[in-house]
Length: 470
Ligand code: F6P
Image 1 (tube, rainbow, N blue to C red):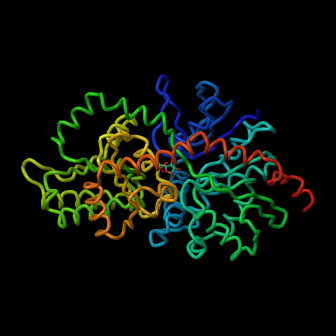
Image 2 (cartoon, protein in one colour; image 1 turned 120 degrees about the horizontal axis):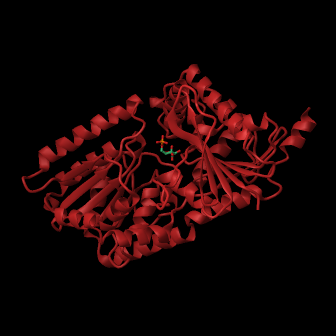
Image 3 (tube, rainbow, N blue to C red; image 1 turned 90 degrees about the vertical axis):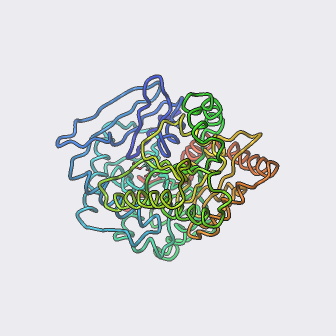
């Protein structure tokens, strides 16, 4: 089997003796790499004036190769184009996008830099899997170096409709760069459909199935690969976690109150402020629950050099203070806000103990917390998932209470419904969602993407096409 080379902006090297990696993309990729002969390449998370050639670490069959980036690159590529232009626009927040040509230049420069470094490590039959919006132009930069390997791209975040995507300066150039991949993967049919609509309307390319494209000399495929979780592993972790001292302390502090939980990176796309407002509405509308419920919001800080992220931190703090001041009592804190990072075991424990999982992003590629919440539940007495219709996970977890996160009254009512939901209904909903998770486990995600990428027919004739073109 050819070697799998994964490229992502963040790389998490598992600590020796503790194979679990934190959060989202990193967990999903780590599960795909496990047991394979592989290389995982990306940013070290460090900024240095003169980046060293590489730092290489080996864990089992996987080699981790990391590079630092220069301060200007960090600003323009990561804080700039990736997170102040692509992130907001792909999350439908055109109003927050701050574009500059310098940032775009930095974005292209870092992709070139990654390609140059990666090129030194590649073998001709390596299969490459590139992850997320930071690295859209990477295949193009590798192709320019003569690399004809099969290269796939997976977008972990949403793909917006063409009306929004076309607000992105240089959108045509970026979509053109995407077509250099053999396979482009999305989280949901909605995302793939939006991309197909862009190709039809803006580029004039259409196929009957919206999957297999011939564009000039390019031939690429589009697919839907909803990312899953390690269902059984997370369930076991959650089961074991409730026997820890930390779990007992939490239970004791709740004093029998129902626990409502939100776990997110502190990001405007997660809808934390609207969620807190909805909780306030719930406390206004349903005073019978006062002193009987505790909402715990865990939201570790993120991308803090970007102004919108500093703003949201201040906003959340103010809202938390307001609610606790307005509704709290000497013996009851209605809302606990924790912005420290937590170990996955502790997150699993908090999700397991929760009566309600509040997952209400305004827009989200998938949202793995929703899936982890389901995996963590005790099937004989499960909690209820309240899930935004705008999370990718809502396409699969139909048995959650699906809500519009912009509608405070609906969310408030859903909290009340969840608290009152009879055991039989909770079990039935949980069973249905757990079956969905088992059907599309984290290993299925990696396997199906790589199988599709390796399948002959879907492109990979880039070199011969280029040859014909010349
Ligand atoms: O899932 C989207 C994503 O941007 C990943 O690419 C990334 O690893 C994660 O969120 C956390 O973001 P950051 O790396 O900017 O902290």
